[in-house]
Image 1 (cartoon, rainbow, N blue to C red):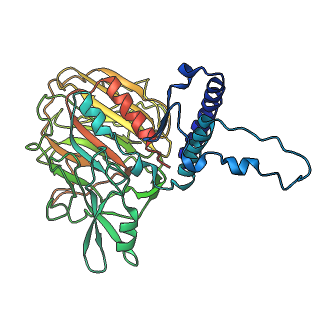
Image 2: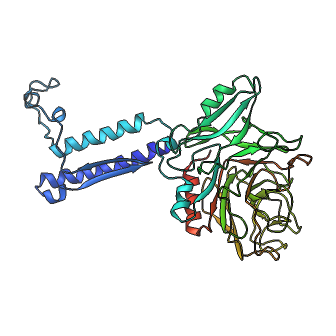
Image 3: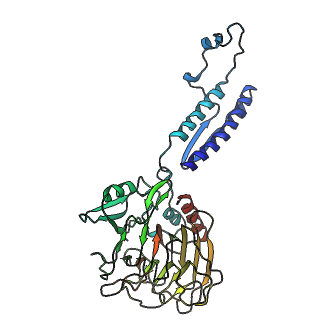
Length: 434
């Protein structure tokens, strides 16, 4: 809301200058200068006017009122200030904008819906095949559910949607439902329409080890676009999974890309805080059977510089900071509260890793080059994992050992361009994570 008012104040200032210029030209009879269109774009709101304006009848000066003497000095005639119709109408329009700036108290993300990360990926020719978030819609037109919570007192469940199409999660609905009880997040819904919903490992939909459980729903709250939301706050024992090989997730050596927004404040070196493509068998099948973003302080092959956390690629049989088991000198730690991480892999020869602060700035390329030896071609199986490694949490197996935070993320078919990824980062920054 603060950003909206600031933008409107800037727009008002510019518009006032335009009005004065128009009044000047109108007074001199230079009508060709007075016929123009002025518009102001503020977070999806467009206020525009075509000049010259016709003053509304309610704002036109009254002749009778103009002839009345001033009560402040009845004995001396007063100079009457003349108002041009252009100036009167323009000031009326500006007053309307000012009123908007005063009363517009809705969440910016809800009102400024129009473009989400998955719209950007689609326009770049790499459509989302899975889109997940507990914070916001990832399509400008998405108005469905984001996730489901389950209440401890009676095991009742409630789907949590968005405040409006393209908007932020309806956290108030969760607060009301979970009041006086503990709630967990059972499933994060897929917004792509392909049904790639992520159920917690250990649920009836994804049977898991007896140590596996869903993440608590209220571990961390935040704001996005000025509205309250909750993260998927994963601790050891929590993880989510989906077999998506038949519902659009790339397999074999098909190219794919992905991004997620995570946190540099809630991490560990446990295996493995991943988001991306994984084994349908939930076993460590082969080099290249996984293609997932990893964000952690885990240094798989040694030689790491610093203490992380780092954005790396979990390609199975190793976390890769670059194109080999040697430490990539371009790697850097991302310790900010909100972090954007991206990974793309053409499946045969090339992959790229990028990262950034999710509140400001552009993506930093950490690696853009050849795949490690033994990983060409890739052997992706098409499952989706969130919060754990690929060989985790199956019945009779162990539970996830990693910690991490998930706010939003998507997987796409095809190899996204740098331009597309940069636009997604700009969209994440504009979402206003705080």
